[in-house]
Amino acid sequence: MNQATTQFEKYLEERFALLHAPQNLKEAMEYSLFSDGKRIRPLLCMATEALNGTIQGTKSFPLAMAIEMVHTYSLIHDDLPAMDDDDIRRGKPSNHIAFGEAMAILAGDGLLTQSFEVLSDLDIDSKKLKKICIFFSRCAGINGMVGGQVLDLTLDVTREHAVTIEEMQAVHRKKTGKLIELSILGTAVIIGLKQAEFEVLEDVAKIIGILFQAVDDLKDDDETTGKTQNIDVINGKVTYITLLGKKRTSDYVENLASEAKKLLHTLEDHNTEMLEQIIEKIIA
Image 1 (cartoon, one colour):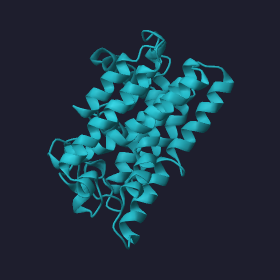
Image 2: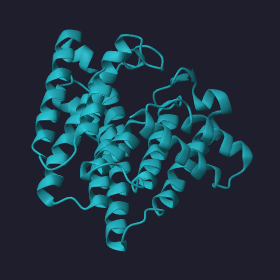
Image 3: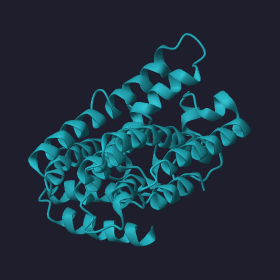
Image 4: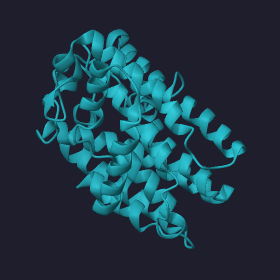
């Protein structure tokens, strides 16, 4: 996987260099886009592409980069005082601390809008490209990631009862899970998987989305994340730790990982090794 990450990073740097923008804006965009992220979503794109054998030509790179740009913009905006109000991201000052709130907002806007230009680099037929563009917009937008952030804010402000795990997962399925679904299912469209295979990956993607958030809560509790420790608890947000406790959350993570792998094993004619490795990387 290290080789795959290096290959994607090289593509990301070269493609980003082609973007024309005011220097201060581009610096703010670059600051967060190249800030030592785990690149889980691009890796999921590459791993899904690898289902049909070894990675050849990495056709999914434009999709992977576009998703990473949207993910990065969401982190920039998430850290703003009006949202999660976090001064640290990936072990260094958040974008608005480094560049000011106005430039941070514009950097996020720039990453979001330019992601569609990058997406258009996909070397696929127009029917597939249209399908992916629609899916991309839905996963990133008001019924996906943005909608999940709204649910998250609403849950914090208006709750009059103890939040249930179902309510919390409804938030995470959109806020975190939709870009993970986009990474896997968008690439499934690119490589032309059959409907039955697509449906298996749909279930896998949903599990990985929940898994990713549960692990993030565990790491936040253990001081192994690059943001302010326990920032969600400080902000009054409900997490898997506050609902289930650390031990039950750890058990839940193991069960989710096992369930996802079992589903992948039903894809007998496909190379699922890299997807399984990513699941292990997430829970490590």
